[in-house]
Amino acid sequence: MKTKLTHFIAVFGLLLSVFGRTLPGFAQSVNTYFITNVDSSHFPNIQFRLRALDSNNHAVTDLTSANLPLFENGKPVPPQNVQVTPHNDGPLTIVFVIDQGAQSNYQAVQNALKQAISHLVDGGYFVDGRDTVKLVVRENPGAGDRTTVKLGATQQGRDLLNFISGYTFPRSAARTKGLKGIDDAVADMSQLVPNPGAQDAAIIFFSRMIEDPQPSVAATAAQNSASDAKAKFITIYSVQTDSALADQQPLQLVALGSNGKFVKLLPNAASAAVDGIYQALAVQRQYYTVSYASPSGESGSRLITVGSAEKPSVGASGEYQVNVSPPLVTLTPQTSFLRRAPVPGAADGQNPYSPLSVRAQVDIAWTDGITRSIKQIDFSVNGVKQSTLTGDQLTPGKTSFELIGDLSAITKPGANIATLSVQVLDALGSQASATERVTVEVVPPMTPSPTPAPGLTLDNPAAPIVLVAVVLILLIVVIVLLATRRRGSGAGAHAPGGRTSSRSSQPAAEKALATLIVLQGPPNMLNQPLRVTKARVVLGRDSTSCDIAFYAGQPSSVSGVHAVLEYNEQAGFTIKDNGSTNGTMINARKLRVGVPEPIRDGDEITLGDTANRGVKIRFATGQGDRWANDDKTQIRM
Image (tube, rainbow, N blue to C red; front, top):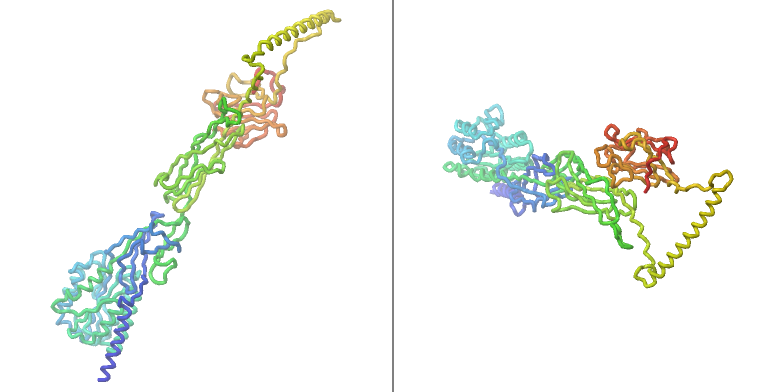
């Protein structure tokens, strides 16, 4: 009696230890996550498959973006960027293990066994092409205990039905180690499910009783088998065929220790007895499709984790590679040259210029093939921010935008360079910029005419008297000049030698700083010396904007405002290209846009393409007597 009591206490302790670990009240709240099938082909949108198991290896069925902490490279992904879609059609992998020991005696329950196994298919729990089933037996024909495959892994339910319908479940000649059959199935499952835990894996064990080892040792062996299966995320379901449930403890422990079920096979209701097992397996099909927008624009490897920023030691994280390039930005101003003239009649102290603006278009493309939305566009003129486009101003999918820059602050007379710059920020944080220049020619305001003295206005009462006095004075001056001239003429006429000493005088021509001689160009200007008498001369085709115009109003390779000639007492003459279409050359050497280059006596200047109505000019200092004797034309400003 004492021995039986001691045995009962030991069994009760084992059951309590198992139940204590599996009851909900003692279960841990930490989940294990398995990430598979990562798809980054639509980056920055990432999608992967997720299966979550609780501490009892049961599928978690209530995940949402609100309770799913998602991390990429250790950084949390905002929940609003995450979508979680549940599915209940995950694959099942089942291995049937039938313990055919010497005491199995399945002949009396053979039909019940066939119904219990066939119910997986007949009950609608098996999905062809998705699920996998395999059947092995533990047998001992007398030459040694072994696990034998009777039905290889198949994804066709009909294969299982055909096998079971003709199988007789024979009894072995000697005792078997039934739990070893479970251990072999656990090892075999690594081939059937390469990523343990990523999908449901179960072992359904049929046995009348554990014949070897003895019951006192079998309980410990059952716990070890259950612990090994649970560590590999495999659930064991045990079905006892003995109507009296003799020595049921090991069969209970191996099932409950792996968070499975233990049931008794009912000969007259076999399908109903195992239906709860198949229902539990159906719940384990639960998994999720998780989609999110990557918050990072960095290139390289990405690590996806759930529940923790660190790579988990248990479960499976996700990985992918990406190569992100910044967007390609092109900025195109509406024009490269603007002329700003003062407004006539501006009052003293008033800004003589009207507001001035320039339009520009920004185009955005991606060289890495990863198209993403634009987060912000900043537009500046000479380093001063003009506008910022964000939010609703950036239509998704749109890649071209019009920008307006204010140039009203540019009032310095002469040529001014306005630098337009745009900076683009995309949804991944990648930045890119572009810069262009616009020349603003500011015409200086005219010097106002002096205001007449108040005493000389016609409405002044003293005006008639003043006018009469002025007329009398002028008459006196004229009479004196005439008298003086007569005396001088008489003396000249009688001067020695009979020649007059007086000579007619003409005003001296304004001094030329340089002379331009047209070597090739408009026929009416060929070989004509053009006198340069001011320190800055604009050359081009637009007669309204230039001091010297070639081919005005005609097709030509000379740009509207082609180049600017400037004089400085220290540096002498320089010429710079004003962003012309066909360029400017000195002695066949092309100039850089906007960079002044010195010119010297005898240099040849080419504007545009001489083969396409361009102009070639010889530059001469001063009057240019060395190069031309004809002084027909003079440029005066």
